[in-house]
Image 1 (spheres, rainbow, N blue to C red):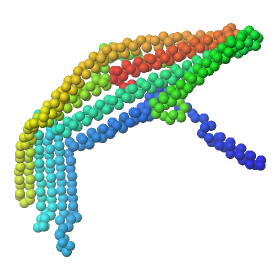
Image 2 (image 1 turned 135 degrees about the vertical axis):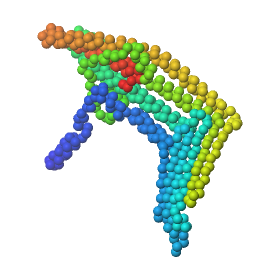
Image 3 (image 1 turned 60 degrees about the horizontal axis):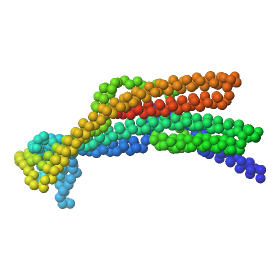
Length: 454
């Protein structure tokens, strides 16, 4: 029986030591820059958007192939024909080449060679040219479709870049918000500790009949409220940290530890307001997107006009077959659309109106951008000045607490007075983090509005 108990004890110890629930997980330490890098690599929305862009680029590569030379070689060196008792060896070979250009020119070259019944090898080759002459400019409709696809791809690329900037801004805001919440929990913990000490004092007075049972009950309620405030703040931080890990694309079960910069120095603005407006009008993603919309509108108008305009094509060819049999062929093909119920005219008018709308939208966007940059510029300058003031305030409270601790060690002040100094410092740190969050958000918003990568 004793051996059985010892064996069960050993098995239990091995289970506890090997169980993952009892093994301490090392926390993943992340700075702000590491958090942003992790988000760009692991965020699911960004990864899906990148794959969609790659898919569009693959489709464009297929369309581009239509305007590249094509060459095919066909060989049949082992070919026998005839009856079973008298098979003739008749090898065959063929070469074909074609090329379509954006101007609507189509080249086709075919060469065939085979061995005939007279045992002679005959060669046949032909060259065919199709050239679009009208309407002008001579642009193939499939090439215009390719240009539209390229513009669509550029739109997707700008959207992806905008999503990355949005993600960087969201990570920055969440990073500093978590740090602020951690400081708030520490502050609430100090209030909770103060409430418990106040309760001990009330209990002592109650036992000496210096306080009533109502005073004791009020002190107990204060402790319960302070504890609930701490627990609620921890629950909110846990939930918010989970959302932050989802944003970064890391395991929800992983433990993270955010590391703030020990000394934050706001970067000075390296450009003035006029330079900022000029940069935004050139690089801003929304303006680039609207300019692409104008180009798309111009292509749509060209396509609509090409459907309604008369077309003139030249077709020519040369065919040669041994022995010395040659043939030339040339023709002009003139096509005139007669009646379509007004569909083409309506399509052209629609394309013109969309193009006018895109130009007006671009003009309005540039006007709004100028006003927006002005607001962001002055807002960021104000928040940077506030950072400097709160940094000095935090240093003052740190020095005040350092003096208070020395006085407490010498018996000059009470523990309650020392705790007030600690609370004042925690509040100053929270105020600084909140101002830092506002400043970083304003900076990211300003740089994003300039069209820069964050």
